[in-house]
Amino acid sequence: MQEKGNISIHTENIFPIIKKFLYSDHEIFLRELVSNAVDASQKLKQLSGMGEYKGELGDLTVDVSFDEKAKTITISDKGIGMTADDIKKYINQIAFSGATEFVEKYKDKGDEQQIIGHFGLGFYSAFMVADKVEINSLSHVEGSEAANWICDGSTEFEITAGTRKERGTDIILHINEESEEFLNQARLQGILSKYCKFLPVEIKFGQKDESIPDGEDKDGKPQYKTVKKDNIINNPTPLWTKSPSELKDEDYLAFYRELYPMSEEPLFWIHLNVDYPFNLTGILYFPKVKNELELQKNKIQLYSRQVFITDEVKDVVPEFLMLLHGVIDSPDIPLNVSRSFLQADGAVKKINTYITKKVADKLNELFKKDRKAFEDKWENIGLFVKYGMLSDEKFYDKAKDFALLQNTNDEFFTFDEYKEKTSALQKDKDDNLVYLYATEPAKQHAFIESVTNKSYDVLKFDGPLDSHFIGTLEHKLEKTQLKRVDAETVDKLIDKDEKVESVLSDKEKESAKELFEKAIDDKNSTVNVESLSPDEMPVIVTMPEFMRRMKDMQKQGGGGMMMMGDMPDQYTVAVNANHPLVSKILKAKKAENKEQLARQAYDLALLSQGLLEGSALTSFIKRSVAISAE
Image 1 (cartoon, helix red, strand yellow):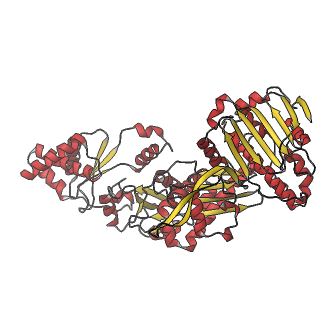
Image 2 (image 1 turned 90 degrees about the vertical axis):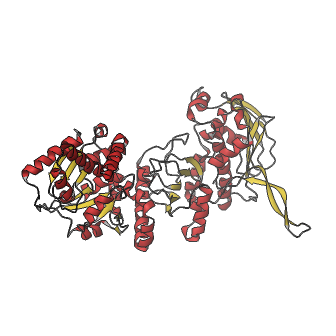
Image 3 (image 1 turned 135 degrees about the vertical axis):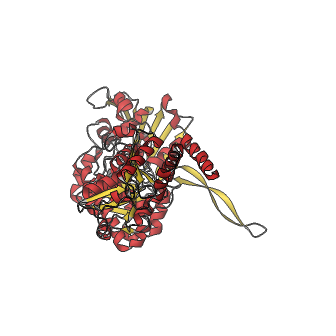
């Protein structure tokens, strides 16, 4: 048998296109060729199961090897193999794929969903790294002759009699000069581990040393010896291919460690398993992210029939779940020809919606099943829930029943529970419910104490998304406002239109205002003299809620008026007309003493907010020492 001919393609330029443009990453060649070998092995299993192949299946392990001296990489399988005619049809005529005929022939057997193209365009990725490619194959069909195909990357090929004695196919790549990096044990092991780690047929790559027990030494201690064993690089039956009913928690945790060896244990997981209206399996893990928005969005791996495709899953997984870890496997996700990019279409949107629903259902189930455990995990879970409620309307609708609000006493409430808790005391004169919150409870302690003295409750919003989440709550919750505890003096935070009498006359108030304006000397601060409780501080410095919120959101990356981030901080200085210290300052005999004491009271207010620094802090300390010495 000997034949020469031309490969049937539409253009002479197919190989340069494959080499330069079709696959952006040259290491993909190994994924494609090993996947093809696995497909060939699985097809044989299917034919055997259908009674179409009567022989023994035997060992179906795919063998990957390389020879640094000969500059070759070989991928061998014991699958269906090919005759010379098969090679001409499936390899030379790129327009056809072996899968097309295979599916057509066996479609009534109900197994067409389990078949991927055997030798399609993926085979030609070999020419990205090889000057010459050989196929040596023997078909599973009884009486077949082995065939050998050689092509040097031009459109010419040669078929001769092959040397293979056993069913299956060898693909031998004669590696080109630019690609000699692949003739390396560690490099090939790395690629196989990345793309082929969970392929459904065992893949052998050389051998490895393993330590096994070897009796005892003269002191009776166990001793070991090193033996060579086949280096099987994959786990053919990964966890997501199994039924959830046959798995225990330990199995899920062990698989997580296999995927992410250096990570802390996950909080919980969701096993995805759906076959209608699309095919999808997988396991998504909720990691511990605490209050840091870890934007490592490459932790979910996408597979198609156990072949690793990408960790860029932004179209498949909702944005707010990109912080999850785990695996999604779906043959229904449309990929471009190089499998590098997802094609956005209806199926992807349906999968995206399904995952959102499954996550919401799981969280709701956990909340109802064991609320205390849910609350204990809220520090981690809350980040996902808030992210989802911010970015996905449907998720918000589901999550509002299990999302939690935490107050400064570390008590947890659902939205409905918190409304009930605060309705009696925290309504203003216009019947608006006012939720008070702190972003840094330790720094804002004086303000928290002031409002809790009135029996008001304070929520804790100290997470990375909370500046945005506050706005969402205000938009969604009916007749509800949110104010930070230091946005106003306590009486103005929840304005009930209750007047407090002032111990100062109008003239004294005006004098106090002028005195403090002169002492403070800051055009970005507005001084007001207010009638507050004598128990309040003599001077209170606040930033209006609107301005604070805009600046916070700008720091978090937009969310409104970007210019706010560049504007100087604007503060309101409330001088408490009813505090004894203010009266004492006004009665001081010397003008310089009045100004010094006014400045001291103002600096104390700044100090309580952590706003006193630099030269102002130094002056305050010196002044404090001087006043103490008097």
